[in-house]
Image (tube, rainbow, N blue to C red; front, side, top):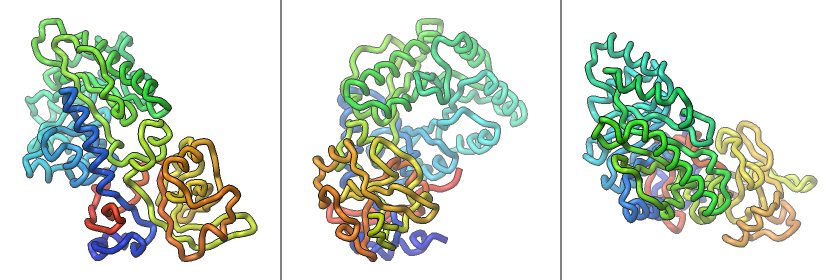
Length: 409
């Protein structure tokens, strides 16, 4: 069993330099600032907010994202996340969860059981999923119609239907005629917004999201139904510019924002230019285990299973926080190789946060065996999934709390 999972609380009150390695460090002041920015934005806009809990997967961060009950609905990608969030239901701070994958047969019995505790909304993008719901209803003798979001593809080419697909009105009609489902709203996620590099570009994608779900929702709004239809948009890059949202929704539609990575952020987010390097709340602590002057590299005890193999415009798989020209340039399962990897993005990073390094620095001048290094990572969601305990630090990097994430599917 992971040492941190058994002994994490013993490190409370100690500096990060005394932690076991590799460890995941969370800056609580940064988390709080990041979450409050978005809470303030949605409050000013007067829109509904549904945070996605997939990044850090823990009660404490989810409570923070909900504004301690100011917002009462989440998106979850796994059954485990929904079960983990039930503590917030008991606290009276959570009422509803969208299961964020197109529904599968294996998930339905578990979701049915969870409806005893909170409202569950399903994601639908195929008529065959309605067949599945009808079959499940007949076998379980259920008479309750599942509320569903219809997933709209606005350019990510992952889940969802494009809104000009001839299959979309057929799907809507099928749902409306089924006793097993009812349309709650239309949902999109602009995953391709991670390629944005300016606020204007992210704003344009946000506008595309809104137009995409509004166009789809018009198949229902304005007809016989008098109910409100929710149109849900968002991704972390577009959430960063939601304050620039313009226009008024057609009557009968209610706008909802969703986002997940924004409390943590990471190098992929910094690469969009929409957040600053100092808005990254997640770091990985590792030991320098060996130095190789002949090739100007060092070995650390954080590899693929501590960092992931995600990349961005920043070179390598992670960068040293105070020496960002040094990156994890290669990895094996349990170890990584630090090497000099300057780039245009790194130069911008150095300007923002400063650096102890100088051009052409030698590895033996930068690091010594036994040093501990802190690393900014490429994709917080995947890196966090590798760790069994989070060490939560204050502004002086002293551990003040330890949080245990929800694991499994």
